[in-house]
Length: 114
Length: 112
Image 1: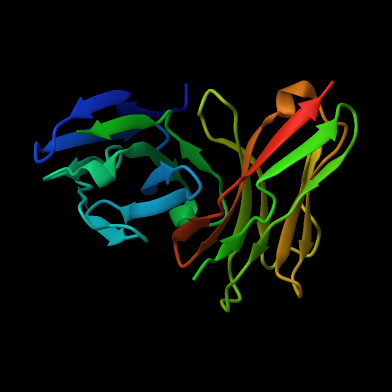
Image 2: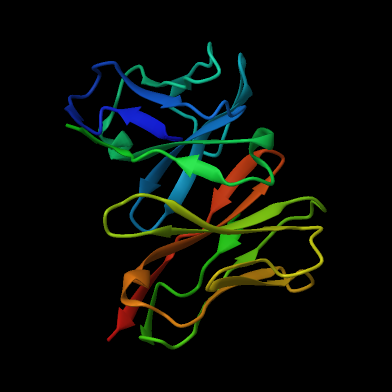
C-alpha cells in the first residue's frame, strides 16, 4: 500500500530535550516536505527536499533541522524544543519535485512541548 | 505577505446543494500550481483537485471542480451535490518554485 508514515503519532516532551520525528514513504518520490499546522494559521512549510542530500528552507524553518540521506526517509529534528513548537506536524511526499502532482500526506504527529 | 487567502472561515450548505469555497492567490510567477485539500475531523489531509497555471480548462474530479480565473487570481472550489461526509476543513494551496503555501482554511458544514 502506497503510504507516508510518521512516528511517533503523539509526543509530549519538555523544553530543551532533543527529539526526532521520522517520516518514511514507499512511493519512490523525489520530493518530501514537513509542515506544521496551528489553529487559524493553516499549514506552513518548514523544510522541503527535492532529492537525496538536497534540502531547503520553507516559510518557518527556525528551530528545526532535517536530513535526507535516503530517498525514502526525511526526519525532522528539534534540537532544543520550545513550547512555541507545540503543534500538529505533517510530512508529505510527491513526484516531479513537488510541482504538478499531488502531495501524499502522512497521518500527522501531535507534539506538545511543556 | 499572505500568498493564499481564504476569506470564509465557516460555511454552511444544505445536503444535495452545491457550494463554492473561495480562494485567491498572489504570485508573479507564470508557473505555479493550485491545490485543494480536505481535512476531516479525523485529521488526515486528503487531496481533492489540482490546477496548473498553464491549464486551459478548469480541473474537475468527480463532484469537485476548480473555477480557475487567472486574471482575478482566484481558484474557487465548487462541490456539487453536497453530502454529509463533505463536512470538513478545506484548504487551498499553491506551489511555486518547489515551495507550498496554504490558506487558513474554510470549515464546511453540510446540513441534512
